Length: 82
Length: 160
Image (cartoon, rainbow over all chains, first blue to last red; front, side):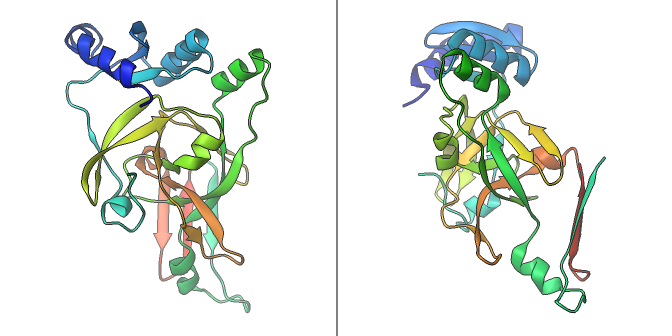
């Protein structure tokens, strides 16, 4: 699965990131934390500068991740992602 | 703010509310590789994929913009995060991709904090011929917009 290693790295460092970077975007490549940034644009530019075209994780640092809703998907009007 | 108006009329120029009902609030859009990634692709001596053209349906029910995932993959994009979403089968993880959405007709160039990759297979706009819907334009676009949907009048309008 894409980002599996990066998501695991985030979980390992989540408490520390929440303590110091709450509300920011953290950029993770493999098991390496590239940095934490205030905006999506800054984080994305830093991720591309470091990783080029390789996949990297841009995780919003937050205690509770919001539930995203797509009612058209929820009621099956449009296919849900498997 | 530039305003886009779409009036549905019959061939003899009368209001056509059913036309709006059938077609819905759609705009032609282009999905692009984000600029920082395009620059990285060029630095690597590769060719930047051409934007993919289709229609976006304005969806006030969607929290964020979602794009047909095969379109994102066709552009060579890879996920940058995941979000939790509700589906007919319960909570599910959706991949989030970086993407740039442009609407040349309206002059919009929308920078978004990621779009969700979803399956919009078979969704079409009832034009002649039918055109594919490749994105649902959700509330993270509408938070910057004034949207008017006039069903009885057969028109909709957006200022963005």
